Length: 423
Image (tube, rainbow, N blue to C red):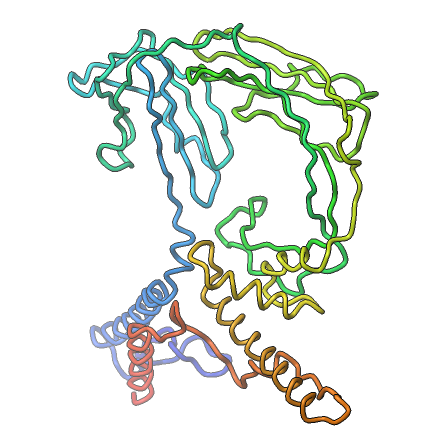
């Protein structure tokens, strides 16, 4: 009796074929096992080759976490920062409770976390306060951080300082006019592909827009400061409103680490604020309030950007916006030549191909203009023609080169298929 094995390449409409027909018992089982083994190996090799062929795509999805420890004063707080790459930090990234020991004696130090900021974001800050001041010059170790390299979970306490008291803090206020860019009628015909590893609601580092308008607005901020460098760790919150609007209760806002600035797009005679701080060392708080006049600052108007101002934003487009081909080539070529924040190699190859066609078209136009007695310019050639190719063009390596392992996997699969057909 024959045994039907799964077909590696079945006929039209077939799922199983009697690949081992005519064999029975152990021979039939070995026959089926051999077919399944070849299919398994082929799939494994193809998968492994994909990892080697596409390292950029794979590495982009490898999540990691960076861990930093500040340089704490012996009579201060220990600040720890988790930076989660390509994702939002979760509860598993930050140990709770936080256990700190003397690295020399391994005796646990009494203390507690007084504030955690940034939960649900890509950066989380944790402030830990010891019950008694640490010993200056001694090294301490944070437990439950086995995922990090040796030594990264240790810190040395710096000498004590005299902290500025909360009541001695000063208030700094700013009201600055800024001109920002806004999107207009021109847009990118194609944008760079969004990162597959970011959440749907997360940032899109390659997303781009062409801005053709300039909008005037104000930045208002009021925050606590002091000339001394010994300002204690502070939690801050602030609220702002325009003259004529209802005042806002500062207690309705969440504590944050930043200065709490606000962007104002509608002008008024004056702008009011309330700002509060809490000293994380002793828990004391202080609140300020006041108003700032618009005065001689420019009006918050909108104007059309010049061609030069628009050109800088064409760099983010995967294809040149209509009428801005030359500017796009100049900006994108410069981006591909710099040593930082360069586009992907495939994007730069596209820029080189498209811009070579543009340069060729301009050269032809100059030649036709020089050779024509009436100065007529020849027919413009479509930019796409310079990069036109027939058939399917697939770059299988990180730089368009074939992977030896991929070739091996393909040859292995072809040999298995040929052997199957001979049977």
